[in-house]
Image (cartoon, rainbow, N blue to C red):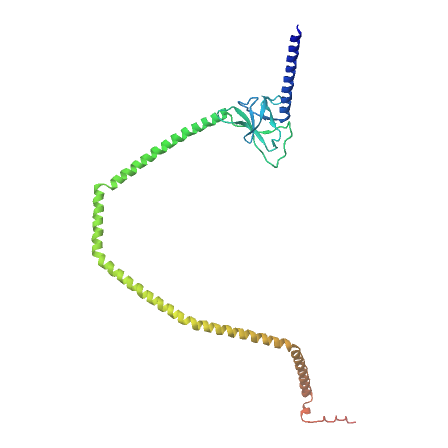
Length: 307
């Protein structure tokens, strides 16, 4: 091998090593800007590695793996990464979603709550099952069956309504037939004749009612005037009665004050009357025993007993 070939091989080897180093550094830098998380679903139809991860509808990462969960085969384990600073929290919920109708499936995560605790890298995000196409088709089939039953029921009810409508139309035709029209015309003619013959009487009654109304208005005005005339004296009498009651109330208060002020004098007077009553009782007893005391000033000497 010539020297030029050796130099060329060395340059190519150095270039390959440099390119590998650059790619490795770029991948390391990219990976250092993402954080891993996981979630579990029972149905992950159409979700594949590389699918978008949407946080509140914003693309924040991608799905890394979609596989059956070894601990529970009935659930699908989904590994994904999101960019640093994505505020995944304990209230965030992951579910199967779509970016648009034309695009493939994506992993949609709700924004949760600002007050909820932030999830650390490697945590499991709560999940919520989305309705699958089979479930939607089953529900649509159920709705279609119910719609058929409702249509049949509505047709039966419409038939009954149509029958009733035909009966009503038949009755209307019978009512508006030629015999009934003649009867109606006869009744109208009689009403016209009655109005023509009784019109003057009706006018006279109307005039009498009008005159009676006018007299009633006059009587009401007279009553109002009488009430107005009697109202002023009645008010004056009530005012005088109220003043008299107030004066009587003041007099009673004065008498109570006098009685309270002379209460001790009344007690002395009662005591003197009691003493006078006692003295009078003693005088009465003395007069009963010695009635001559009313005539004699001095009592008679007592008689001596003879010896």
